[in-house]
Length: 480
Figure (cartoon, rainbow, N blue to C red):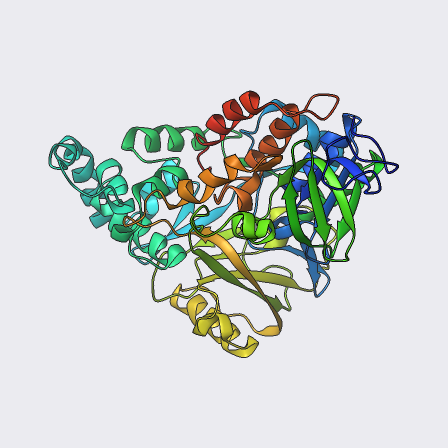
């Protein structure tokens, strides 16, 4: 174990007067908090710093009009690893509820149950869509044969797999909505990472599975998604980790045996290993002159979200947990009702609707005031043939970095932005923000646990073990 506050390891840049920790975690989202917890439980000394004034990141929850809400629609998938499930069971106990998914998606002006269900599909799918989709299944081999030399795009991956109808009616407009770029301009790898169902055969298996008892379940905490990060923070503190919100990193100076760190408060410390879960652009900034523009590739541009929370004076708006809307003339991509995700202590006389409006930070939607945002949401609700509610209040939050934009012109932008980080001694990049991926929370917790596994009981790091884990992470695909 690295020496304690009375001195740093020999050769550390900070000298013997600089406090030392075995592990410095940068970023207080679920990945960083899990890494801090697991490392502290191993007996390592741990400090976590988070620039924001609160912990949890995009997985935090907060209260609007007495209702616990999340930063958009979140849920835990049962397909998580046994180790992740064991951690969540330990932290949440009976508060981790098994829930039945009950969503809908908009397709050719009709609402279709999501996850897809055989009986509902037979009743609600437009006949024209059924005919077109059936034709796409029959002609799938021909589409592959005609693709020689074609650009590998989001559009081509969906068209080759599910067919032109699925591309035109759902996946294409939804992709354009989320990333602000037509699917023909988005890299094919983005679709392969984002869409777990890309062939008719996989779609058929998924629909068959959802028809079985228990086939549409998900896991969700009684007090909102943020209960996960709140319990992680409590457990990490209890294990001995020091958590420091409202604390940023000013500079990192990697050394032969440790990294010297300067925090925004002026505090200095040395770390045997830095686990970085914040964006790689921020890492480049704190490394300073040692890592010039020639060595650091810029990360992909990120697409943001405006989240609009509408307070409605009725117990429930609908019985559905989420509505997915690909239509480009509707500003929001998803409309969710947090109280329908759980059995929790919500008031009986009101509910809250959460609308997710994809945008680019700085654009007109990003700058719109609350009244303008509410008007956009209500207009979209009306266009979707939903009852337009009487709104008693609105709260708006903005997330600048949600969807990484990877285009056909720069399909390797993410890899290029990450390759240089492998050469920074003493620093390991992980997590959704650090690895520039839009991933499930159970994958992110898996990353954190695996990263700590690469540390031995003295705090020494195994590059070989991490290379194996990174290769596994690269195979993760978002599950919906």
